[in-house]
Image (cartoon, rainbow, N blue to C red):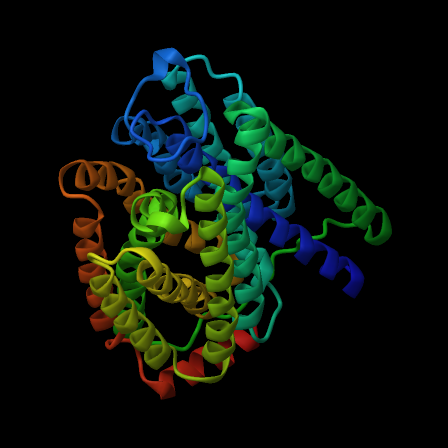
Length: 414
């Protein structure tokens, strides 16, 4: 594959990360729009769907379960068959599943469609992330850039969804982006065909690299920390990205008096926060992951506790700050896995990491619903602050600089 083709492939991988987070989060804003207890008018819900926000959001649970559970088979297929082929299946599957949600006639049908979005969306992280770092000496910045695209998908979901709902209704909020994903999938297939014609072989060759020079106890410790922090971090990320539109609906007061304003402020926070990934990606390539991770998690805990009862401008400022820490942590576990996993089974390693993450995130939606119905969002921020504290303590047990340098050297030779 030529350098130009590699750049084109990287662009498609970035688009994939964008769609992965965008399409799975459309329902988060649609739920606010059609809920009977919404504060601002966003859409006219179907008469038979007269449900509160807490009643509606559990219908997305199956989708988030699938988003995690199917990561392992997706990673296995990618390692055994074709990573590029799985990426094509991702674009086409996500597009078709999202478009199907536009035709749901009952809440259970919408839940099935969201589950199918989760099944297709599970492909991206074990496959796309492995493709991003393949053959690269420094992985922090490529992962950070790719992560920013994912964050932009998170940011675009509430903003674009609100606008589409206001103009054409909530069904179009599923149909239009689904059709775009299908079109991108067709373009990606054309790109793969062109690469094969030029090179005479598949574009995504799996590179076999040597195992890192680590003793078993150190390797087990790193993996345990990765999976514990990934689980908690997944809960934090899902809770903040899913609930932020509703948090702003309740907490911003006069700053958000319409559905469009809620969407704008949510997108603004997500977009600003995405910059943190670039900063963290740069630092983990040049400094101690242990130090960077600990500082980010500790700061996150402080900000969540500070958010307990804030409203208005203060709530907006602190929301920007805690989302900076949430997004900033995203590349860290991926960099660590990239340094310790062999290329031939790297997709499966990422699959295990993401099945842990998304298995936990599947519990996030019912927890949000239960806490919101009983105590409001203050209880949620208490839980998030406690989780961030555990992450900060776990990060302190990561290897110190000497072992990090050996890991970096091994990954560079992969």
